[in-house]
Length: 276
Image 1 (cartoon, helix red, strand yellow):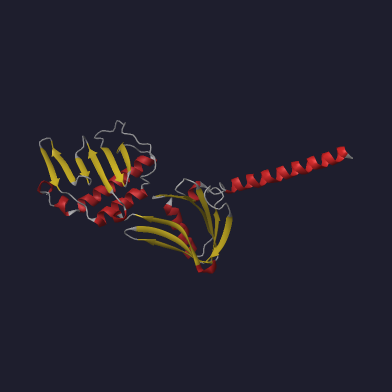
Image 2 (cartoon, rainbow, N blue to C red):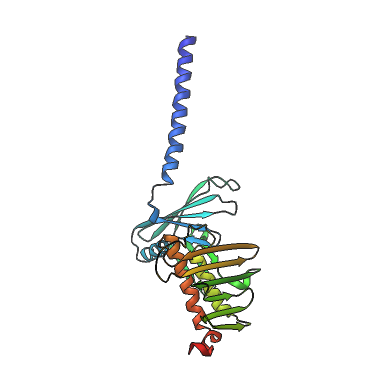
């Protein structure tokens, strides 16, 4: 009888361990069930794949079935998962905080009514509304208002042998028109509105993320770029060439082109006589 009882207890323990393992495995699989294209990542002032969230908002407004995952990272770098789906006129939001080591480990689902998107010259926000007790769930909020930062400045140098330098830290604009002619614009400044646009371009380019860039290529008339960014107490530096066709290279070229386009709109740039 003792031997039989021991075998039964052992079987029960094995069954319990197997059941626990299956639950953990299933939970892990759930975190990877969606393709990468349906995952939006939000980390401080960095957003990846935001266009997919825009598509989801459009489908939700049209009551088309859709699903998406939003991953928001805490200051400590822990992920919080938002699984959002549209079924008819209802939006279901499941929030999983089991990997947030400093939060309450739980999984909760909320039925809501709508999703609201607000994009202004200084902020981006997405909120799910009409949840229980008339609450809202904040999905994304990113400010690109330079006046809310303690310090924001950048230096962009580009061309063959640094033909142009924009330096908001030193209020400087320098253009080398040819070997014998260099124009220096003293006390150069962007307006706050223009700086906000540039800050947003940087956020769209995920400027806080590490990037793999190169200036090594054999393209004729290669244009090289260097971008230095000071934000509060942080600093980021990027160097690349316009022949860098990697995803990061293309992203940084779009950022640089956007900054240059805003530069050309400034009154101080347009008033340089040599450019007429």
